[in-house]
Image (tube, rainbow, N blue to C red; front, side):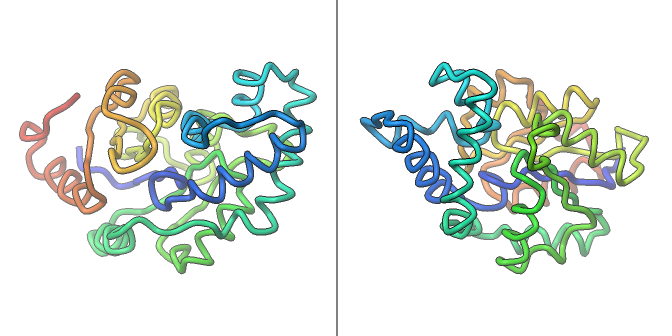
Length: 227
């Protein structure tokens, strides 16, 4: 079935926000006097909700993890949010998909207010029918919950008409919870093994490959290699 709706993750899919996120994490960990030996070791933190990472990697209680998120946002909201850049060809990809009649939506675990700021800063907000994200109190932060929220807000009932695009396993898992197919992007923070292991239906190496993929899905689904 031809897709009508394309839901996008933000960090690692539309923009490379690694620098700002890592700087914000280091600021927060320094506040708690937690030493970082190698910034590269923070790679697994990129993508999943920060509260979950703090509980998983630092042994924080949920209450302390929420406090840590607030410390993180002190740096992020001040400057980390714009230590960021759009991946090459992403705007061309968005423009092409919109011209072909797709409705483009954002479903991110980043706070919705921050997602809007980022997309407006980079002049990308105009391409999206809806920008959905997490709440500031973290009551909606899991990717599955965010995707469900976006689907409901946009009154999308025919799940076969929608596809999720993301770079990490939680994007895949959240989409599958909601009955969506998933295109994993290999230029972001995840990997082939992570995305295929999570159950991604398709993989693309470059943003413009997504335009080709959706075109082929519409014309001849049998030509698409499903992972």
